Length: 139
Image 1: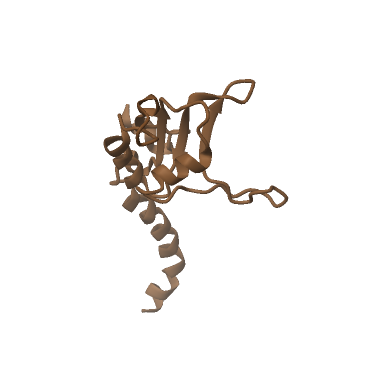
Image 2: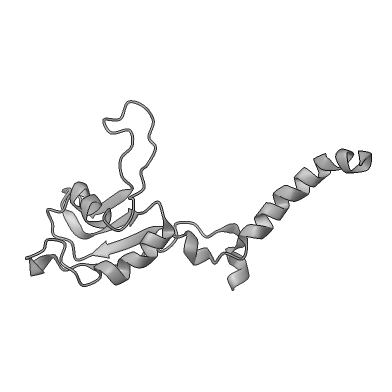
């Protein structure tokens, strides 16, 4: 027992690497909580996207430094031109990757605004920002 107790520190280190080993079986796709939305109207708002897609899962929030008007804004990036007008596409991040995986099936080819066919959206999984360190094994 004494040797077991003494080895606890070393076991802790091994336990840490063991933790990484336990995460490996999860497919990298399941960690992507971002969706790419196109076909948006030029006057779309972050609030409108949050309300629409928030029905499927919780939209993630960004943590900002103090002093910003909204310290916890939603992780919604509406792409705009140099005049600030929406280009018609956006990236939205959910807290749960499963919500993001479901979103394309649920919202693709649906109207953002119920009776307005000009707001028919195309929704797909967004590409990961940075490849996970284990991503090289896929190739």
